[in-house]
Length: 212
Image (cartoon, rainbow, N blue to C red; front, side, top):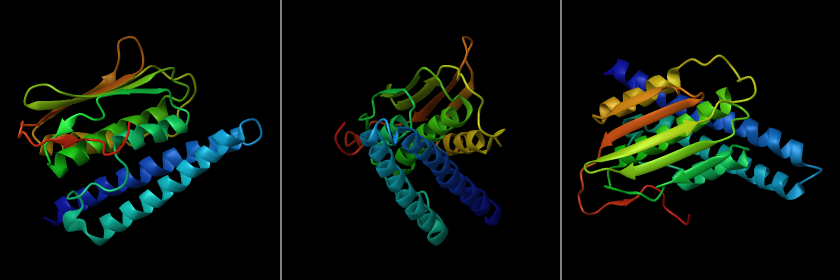
């Protein structure tokens, strides 16, 4: 039990810290670059930077203060806000199906959000300058599919990568009885494809809560 708890803590802290810090660095760099030529864009990036920091702090307090319920209640922004944050950081993200209805299973909903966030963070870190990134969430019978696909980057990545993020995604998917494929694309770039069991309960709610 202690080993499993430590593994969950490591996974959750990686998700919070690695994702948030990577995005905050990109937002800060973007705000600095746009300060003189596009002050409105700079202010938008700084606002997103502040929101990211506050949400990261709240998530860290949740994980450290309530480990027994760390996966019980998704905190912070929904998928739409997650995608918006990466766009503000300069990533050319297109998205579809962010309002796909899901059963009120918080573990499943949190897994979808974490998978999308992890995949986009990896693009930000390892494929800077990519020309296109797509996020697609859809229901296919008794399952939900999540796909994050990106073209190859044009600049050097930041850091060598520990693969903890990929391992964490696989663990979440396995715990929910799903399957995952992650790897390079034949034409360049990277792809993450996830399928999670998602029975139709007739009372689903959208992944994203709020206006598109």
